[in-house]
Length: 157
Length: 157
Image (cartoon, rainbow over all chains, first blue to last red; front, side, top):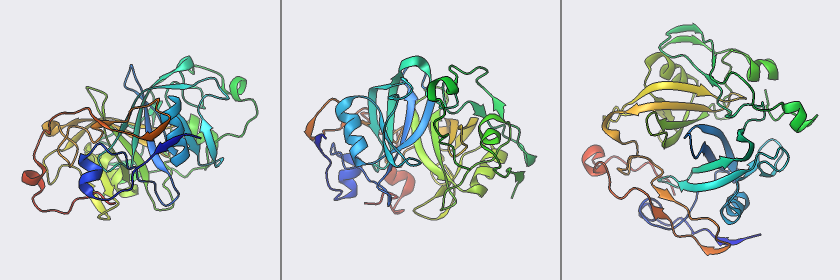
């Protein structure tokens, strides 16, 4: 375990305008994380960290999330090989959200097999009725069955 | 109010592999939203939508969030003029997160005055001690006092 220290949140000015790292974790002890590809800028995934996983990410230089479905620390890529190497970490104004810019080993981040989890777009400008999603990625980068075997699918209905 | 229809979530295959829009809202009725600049790819902000604001965003083509601090629909830019014009909407694999790609009128998205809310980076590779944030944006794009006057600061400690 690392000995990295987060600061107490004392004032709005400290949180917004200073160089102190004083992240806010929600009532479940989590902070949302946006992960983008360092080169393409594409959003790869959105996940969560608890305090320990944020500290591990900082000290290790690889993305370590907290899995809400499995309720464990999740060193991304340990199973699949698709490790996310950190190129930059950013924190937002009120320090309740983290942005990771990463290089992905193997080029894919999505358990369904696509490069990005956001492989479908939502048409807009429609005023009524059903929405038909459009696949923006045409081919999977890997076969989830080969990589994950019979591990339970993390998607919850 | 729009008459856009979201589908019921029935199977994992429907949610992950079909063209049906069946978003998942959390126990508070919210879905997290990542907003990036269409041109630079920069993450501008992370917010939330409820069902109504997501439908309004789709029909209007401008970002409409749900403000958790004020508990109201939040048509971004109505006060500040910094409207976010939608260029693309993406949904993730399990449909519990939205990615908006936008053009920002006025070039800024952050209530502190910066272009992006993520104007500070977190050094990594450190194993212990305090972390000193680095300002990646050097100058504010606008003066928050001029734009928001004495409106309460949304940052919560």
